[in-house]
Length: 124
Image (cartoon, rainbow, N blue to C red; front, side):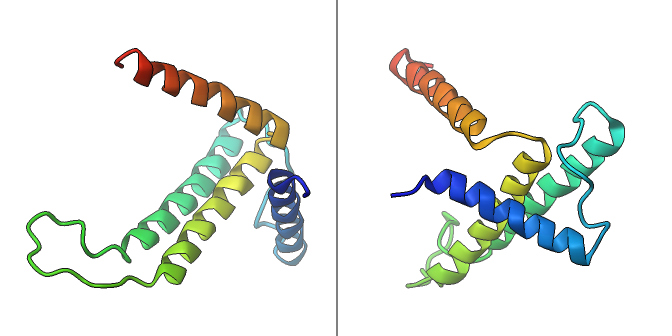
């Protein structure tokens, strides 16, 4: 089986190049210098687009209110998942714009996972 995380990064970056070819101002050249003001603006805008897509996913959840007396028996899981995928696409674009590699991302994921597991075991 191929490295799926690498495939996600590769496919997303290919898509970003396609968008940039068609709409030159859609993305700046990357990797960005994340210390620069203009880069931080791009990072913020990309991050907010991902958050907006997560809010679109939330619209599909109908049974979360504790005071709601009637339940919606089913949600459109495909539409819900599509919004989550849209969100992750923006988050992966953000990671790529910042010049973070799949290995860096995975290593940092593992490091943070260890920290949060330790916290749980130690009564954080």
